[in-house]
Image (cartoon, rainbow, N blue to C red):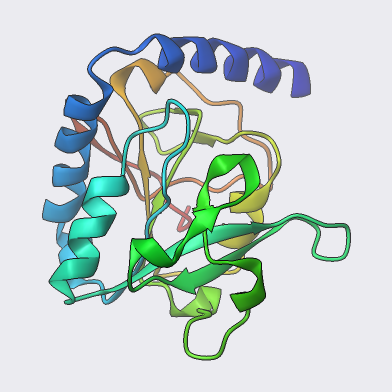
Length: 201
């Protein structure tokens, strides 16, 4: 099972790294997210800030902060033995307040982690924009392998909408899913929106 996941991950990395027109396709994908009914109904939304060859989200997150009609939350990596590699959740009000953290991803300064009024509990999230290395059309998701999002998604409300985003080249026939893996409610690429199995299966 692990070797199968590792093989899928390597192939998906290669496909994503070779993708051209990333910014244009990312804009199409992010627009589909903004137009999604579940997104429009949500109040507290988790967006990731992209790194490397992921779907680009920076401009969309910046625009959503300026609109001020939703609470925009970003994740940050708490990477130590005690926390068991957890994601912290931060209510971001200005991207300028962020600094480069783990893997070069923008995050709040470490001195402000846990700050009252800015830290957000997982159960407060209405909608999560979820990155992935690969997805399938049933909502299966393959992550980077560290388990950060697996642990987060296991602790959000059952009615929190989980939406995975990726390029068409990241869609594979069937993600190798294990018992602890969580299906997305929907997956968005530049060409389609796929209804996922979600958690109510």
